[in-house]
Amino acid sequence: MPAPAWFRPFKTAVYALLAANLALYALFGSANELVDSIAWIVLLAAAVLYSALLLLVPVWAWRGEWLDAWDALLWLAAFFAIELNVLGRQSGYAANS
Image (cartoon, rainbow, N blue to C red; front, side):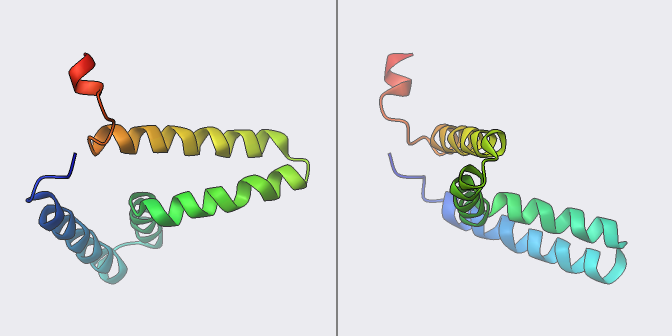
């Protein structure tokens, strides 16, 4: 199911406001507030976070850090499931509930 027509402009506006918020923290906030704001933007930017985690899973597994690899893989699966649910892309879910 495609997203409603208003979703793309809304998403663009939210990211623009977050960028403005980041600029305000850079100009007037403390270093901790700036890092916190950057971290939230990175978390919301699904491709950056997901790609970084996806690249780290085989690296950690190769290095024998199985718990870290398992944890990252589990978080990726959770993020994927949440994204499907939030964006309404899970087919048949509403019809079956």
